[in-house]
Image (cartoon, rainbow, N blue to C red):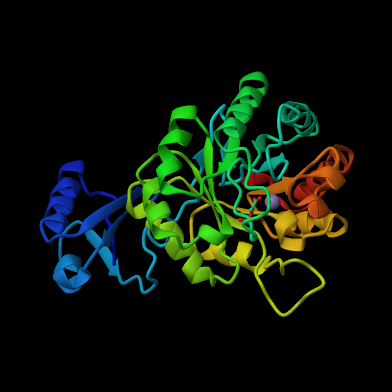
Length: 340
Ligand code: PEP
Ligand code: MN
């Protein structure tokens, strides 16, 4: 349920309203826009009579929000959320960022690829240290040592770093090391304990859509993180499993438009996992950009044939540089001036 407060309401009246709602065991979520203030009610809303609420002097109108996700819902927060990922790198609300780097951190050579992606225009660096591999015999990643190498790259290049956290017990380690964005992988999208644990921090979370998750399930996963107090959730469409076998996954560019419609959270596209093959990555990156994504996450490896993981979908630094030029061209074609 949302209550739209009249523009002339005073701070004092708003405080009273919030106290009254909270005394009924509900949580409130206030969004102050340019023209109106919205108070979102979260919890068992049967405890509040909507007609009584609407009859209050300061209330303009009351609307039921039928979707099960509330905090992630654009009805609660009409303006786009803008998330600061560190070093002034903002995403959402017209701020577009490209996250690039190898699938796995493989050693000190990460610094070299980091320099190259930054030089080509990437604004955030990615690298997996804890890897969710389908086979237990596949390389599981460098763990803490890998995170430390990412931190070295961050210190040199002054760009935010993104890495996947797989275990709730590792969240504190990510916090202590200063990982700027914690990625929740597709396979963990419904690992509710992990979602709650990252939700207790304020660190931005890059939440990837599950392999077979509907958009509603995806937004409910975001809701889990937000309901613990962390509103810094960046959604990531990375392809879903369909009957198609020619690509690793099927890129659901629709989800970019649908998530923008339903939610105020930024959404990025991951053309690497979405396609699984280097030859299709750029086309999917351009499609996501044209569909209005707030950014991209792209895997880049200096020698894809020797990559520890996901070599078949990696761009080389040269391919990435060329892709960046085309991404910029698409952006300039589709973004309205007053949007950027
Ligand atoms: C990754 O980003 O390397 C990764 C494992 O992605 P996903 O969880 O989308 O498969
Ligand atoms: Mn990967």
